[in-house]
Length: 533
Image: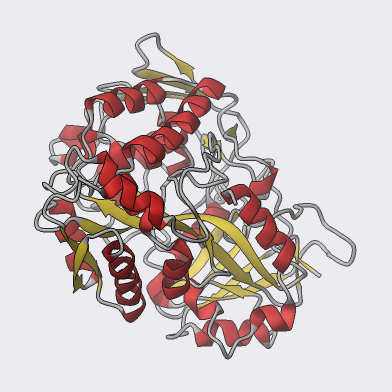
């Protein structure tokens, strides 16, 4: 059964909600304050240049105004960039190194000041500021002059030109997915300082703004009185309790209707004692499962003798593994969606290629492919030192023993594992999770398999002249041709090169109180579009 059919079957069996609405429905109202509970550890900062954790990301999303954005609609309604503060998509130079954006007049920060091009110029400069050490600098370092800012020699990248409502960005080399990367940057006041601790209550240009922030205690967000954009926003604001120290302290108040929403780790929703599916069903009113973008699989180290120039064995491993057993061990079946390829089903360009078996392994096919290509017959598997991950690794070991491959398992802490996998030494099979920072196929396929990213996101050190050329050609395209090329390449990589064992994408669970309406899942709950009954 293909992944698309499995997703549909899961939706049918469990009532998975993948279609909702942003409009006020019967019984819903405009206004009111949403009550949110979050662990303070999931709110690293409310400064857009520093925000990365899931809790803070959900809050900042309500305050953000971007040049281009993904609309506040369910993912099932289609993913596509739309101009937000920009009047249209940027004008691109012939050499594809210069992008010119024209901004809409009328956008204002919550203190009443107008949003000009300087707001986005400063947002980009702040990601490059050494005191901030922003994660997002990986997406702005190709701007002309970014190297001087990163080195502390300037506080402004010379390749960014802001004149009134016109923003011009000059790049050192073509970055075909630069429009999608702009979704990572929120307009900020041009005077906002690069404080290493983050500026957590600055004026914002989105529908809401932070009026109060007390680390470890609470966050208060209220409507931006000057917002005139098109994003749906129904409630008056959000009161956020940051005092919980465990996920039970988040989910329990929501079930009691003492809180309306909170972010918890996916495993917490499927604790046996919770019985959320039994109590609420899925997709009816309170509990939802949405196909997500977080990938989980095993990288095959193409720089080591076992898998180097050995696509037959890499394909054999893909046929031999029991994806259902691995899913059951790590994420559970309701919380995961099996996959045999790399692009998420809701990513632009995705095409179901039907490459490897999803429900049970094909041992006969795997043995035929492995015959004569086992080389040393020994593989070292690195994984996380957690019981569920070790159990999954044991499952892989048992599966590969059936094709004559002996697996030695070594487990490490998460940080130690990442460091060891990135170095690419001493391992042949490595546990690899991944989540794209923005919704473009480049952020998956190129990051995984382009030889330029070895030691960074390309942990399997796959470096094929043929696939480097195909990946970079797909990246150079725009519009439908871009997505068609990536869709075909996703299937070809999985089928012919098999540089990785794709296992599953994590479904995103959401639990809300009985007061919540306008449930929009992208795949997490879209707080901006919420309403109350």
